[in-house]
Length: 80
Image (cartoon, rainbow, N blue to C red; front, side, top):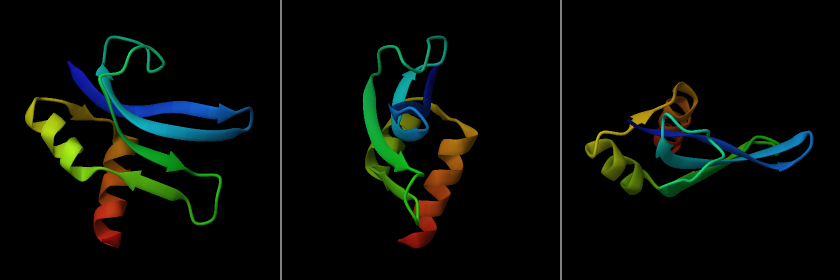
């Protein structure tokens, strides 16, 4: 099954996340099929960029979103 989830990047104690599409049976740090966004919680306010067209395209192909990604998508939809 495909899943849309966060992939941790950045330095120690300064996380930055990429929102990626990958196989749910593999580690989040392994191969990714597509990168659909970016999340930086270390700045005020937290920076979130999500390509909603890509997210909807992958959801139509059967990808499931993690709870955190789902809340980030809702937050960006409200702000637009």
